[in-house]
Length: 364
Image 1: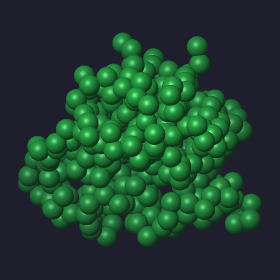
Image 2: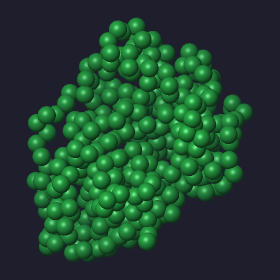
Image 3: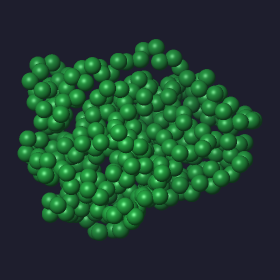
């Protein structure tokens, strides 16, 4: 059975990510299937809207998408597989397509929504979360950065919440995601099958009617958390990663101490890169952000300016420690945030392509 199941019912296109054993982690084939069907439905006047969900281990819902297939990243980087380049180019183009989609795109973000799962949901016009939602951009844990437009959508969170989420990889629940501006509405997970089936069975006459009807299903976010934005701002508005970490370590509070400890486990190099990414992206449009991230991901796997490729890259080492050898002891280089210099960070933002040859030059 296909890893991407599609069905047209009534005037709505339904997509189910069907790779439950891998928490619907995206492969290149899945990215290509999603792109093809979204383009076909975009140009089909009979289709008024698109709805996307993930298959859980016990049936539909329960997991949305855990991100890109990081084991593929590891194998492809070590073997020199050119499909690694295709993966990121086509994934980011898909993210852009979803943001610019001219019809309602309804993302059922139940269960795990991380990395690439955020990339295929944040551009949606209706982003639904539940009490089971576990939302994060945890890339610094594997020596990567929050890509798939992460710079764009995280930098637009309230205050310095974007820096906090990008650097720490902190996981948000459903109500927190709404408060952060990363979801549009909360629904109890038990209601999702009814909502999905009703979408299929109702003879909607317009795209606007579909969006409006879904929005009427949202539960009030009465226990809306504050997310501690003022506390986060006090630390994460600081100019550098070193200043952020030192300020956290100097504070005796449990939250500050715990946050500092998390940052000390992340890739020191990528913490510096990510802080720069989020702050640059705050004043960028989506297409420029995605082009910047495409440049950055090339440097992550081919850090030529540091003489590192293959197993020597932070990202390959991070994936090795988390998902391959599973020793959870990455050998980061440099080892401490204090040892990272501006000279080794700046080249991540230099494009390896001239503008006319950039793989995402067509995005607008």
